[in-house]
Length: 176
Image 1 (cartoon, rainbow, N blue to C red):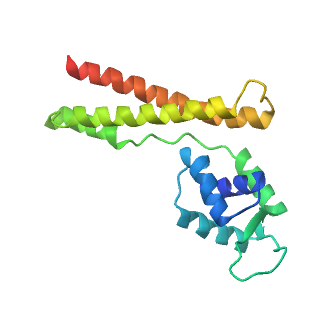
Image 2 (cartoon, rainbow, N blue to C red):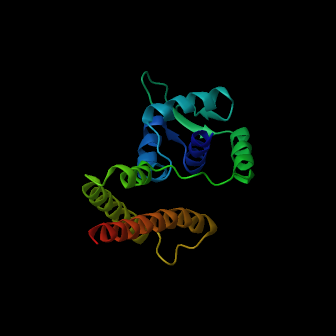
Image 3 (spheres, rainbow, N blue to C red):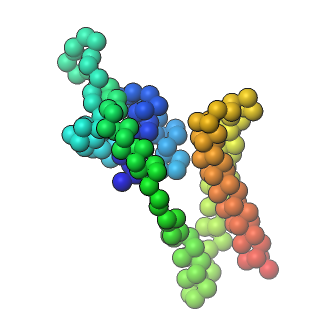
């Protein structure tokens, strides 16, 4: 159920066309809730059919014009309901951890290069998040919405920091 709620959130922040929404997802929501453009367009149709969003009237009707969507009152109610609903943490399922556990049984051939590749990927993502933090969250940006958005980004920073440190430690342990 989370993709429709992510779309409602994005549209409440700013009414958008499907294309604008997919671009915004790629630059924000996509860091922690990935989805394909096709999934986003499919959900837009469902949300519209369910009466949670609507297509804004075009200022000048034109053939092939982009549809711009906005959230209706029922969509805001649904998002508020979902936001307040308790949810247990998800169990982690990471193929890399399973592969390491399997390597303990069948041997470590090929494990070290894969760990190094993951380390490079996590370092790159950490750099991206730190750059976003520096750009988008100066100390004077301190409203409640800013603090909540910054908390989401800090979660990404903390997770990437964990993975970098864990991978470095694991690689060092393999070298012993």
